[in-house]
Length: 164
Image 1 (cartoon, one colour):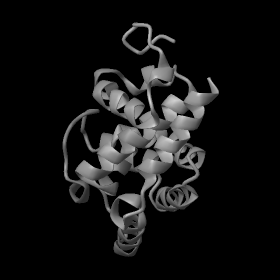
Image 2: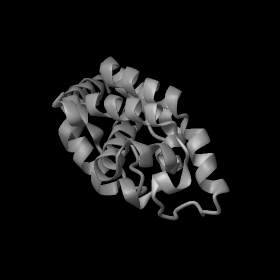
Image 3: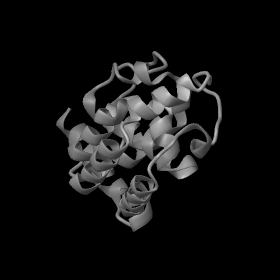
């Protein structure tokens, strides 16, 4: 198979963990839309790595505001693909409370450009009860609960690679 850089790659040489490492090293060199051209199992890894990075660095409110929010359905599907229904349900509920397309729209209507940096609270008016509920839900996501989503992803990728 061709890798995103155009080189041939023998995907069977990788374990799930090694494939995630390779994706992580390449992820930011290409647009998300380019990754959408790959097999669904690679997209699963891409979306979970991207989500994890965003959540780790900035938290759920910035995730909702940033362009990755456009890919919420893909991220929820990725959680389900690896068998992590718990995190899929939590993210679904967060996005029901604060739909990313609305949050992103508010951000862009505020005079910001695509990659401008801002403070969430300065740009959005959110009911404090809703914000508290989102924070509570965020605390239940794998990143904050100690749940090992990564091993589920690695196992999923190992299975998919062996099926090739």
